[in-house]
Image (cartoon, rainbow, N blue to C red):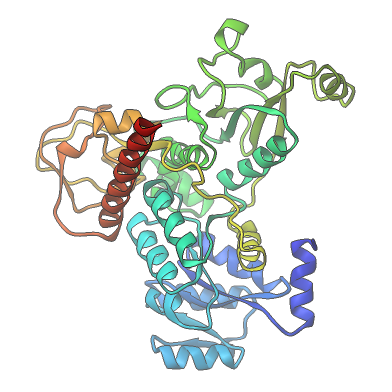
Length: 443
């Protein structure tokens, strides 16, 4: 099997390209457009953003000539432009998911409800969908994955994001027959559960990023969401609500990630975790019960055992997304998907005391943050999934700071795609569980 680089080079030589549609021309989207302009066999032929000037700027910064950028919301004009080897800038995301010329859609909006609609529309229109929107994935990914399979297209998370990078390590270790003890990522800033756009504003300005996005990293929400995606892909679970979140080094982690009776921190093996001190890397803790394998690992200076660490010290975010686009198009395979189903949940926690009648805001905002727990525990508590949080969710009762918000605590004041799809997913899972009980009783 040829590598992706050679496959793309082959497409280029044959005069073919993978035609990519992008929704979201923010920091992630802009980087991806520029990266793909350097690549063989692929192009972002249409990009949508609520501010169309963001799209034209993204193309111009990528080196696309101004005369080759067509600004339109017309399907006919968009198709004609793409057929003429031009690129399209639009404010209508439905154009990206519907026109025939697009083969793979990338959602780079970061907004769960918008991402849900983009994924839904893409699958219905028989297009592969690559999600940079992990918040949407952990909320309705199991449903979207099943839908995509039924439609004969690929639903996938992205290479370059931590979950995708972790999956590379996991697939490598599991294929070789190692026991995988833990999967995790580094957190690159101190956990501050009270972080909000105001407190993050100064640092965000220095970094040229969104204060809300930065706050979602600082308050731990992004970490919880990312490790929920890994849990749903692998079946690994958080060892405790919120994970342990220890501070450590690459060298110290093999000893830390042992069972408590062996001097480590774990109640169980096969866990997802995060660690302060190893950012921006991701890791897998692996082990073997074979003396010869352990001898070889020690000879290769992988440590003294019985645990060893596989560590990747970087992830290139949306700059690696084109690899997921190519993998979906060429091999019809996802980079990471919720193969294990709903195993974990990122649930909603009050960031401060909230009063009955208050409206929630959004991820990285002033009202709530997310924490990870097992899906079974979340269901018992009726815990409210973080991906359903938006400004149309109103509290029915007062909630104390640090308290998990439940479905019983909120009301949806305006319909949304992600709420509807989550309801559909919950009903599907209930049906599957009922069938499984019947089948077990009949055995």
